[in-house]
Amino acid sequence: MSNRSARSHQAGFALIEALGALAIAGIVLSALLAVTAQWLPAWKRGLDRMQRAEMVAAALRRAGDDFAAAQFVSLNREQKGPLFIGQEFSALFVRGELGPNAGHGLDVVRIGDDGARNERAVLRARAPFEPAPIGQSAADRFRFGDPVVLLSAPFRMSFAYADRTMAWTSEWRDANKLPFAVRMTVHDDSRGGAAVLVSAVRIQVDTPGGAAVDSAGGGTTNRTPAAAESPQPPKNEPID
Image 1: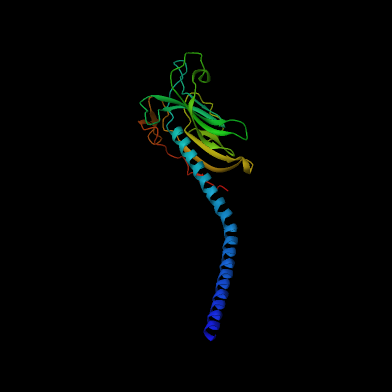
Image 2: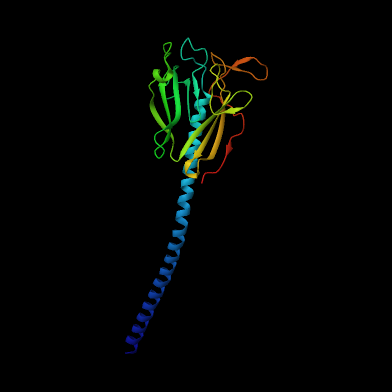
């Protein structure tokens, strides 16, 4: 009887230990769930901010590379100045072909807003360049395709243009030359259109034939259009 009683006592004690361990495990799991519930949304918000920041930075790089490679190409023989139509939320200009199958041709690139406010996106589209007949406008001449979404709502991109005096304007009206620099600003409509990131690039080509004016000596030198230099350090602001 004594042995049987001892075994029953040990079994009861083991059951109490198991119940105690389960209770402690439950308390630990509850604490972990509470911490995770508080930490997971903050982690997700941080990840979303990082992804949006990378998207905005990639859009600025893509647009900046296009502007830096702009070339002095006229629409036709009647037009002496370059084909460059710069507005606050859109720009149209000529650059060298870009892509895995690109040759030595030219593309007309259009970057700007497209769509309604809630579905608005900043698109980059292209069309092969061909001289237009005299009297035909660029809008009537080119049929743009290969659209690429650079930014989607709530973001949008505005442009400003400067000559060599670095006086910025929201439109480029000088039909005789390309702007010296282009500034790109990304706005967040969810924050009242506040600017969240700004970058600027310099257009190297100033004259027909791919020549750029050397500001130091006043002469002209041949440079690769894609080798852009920033006229001022980019100004970056955090994205919430």
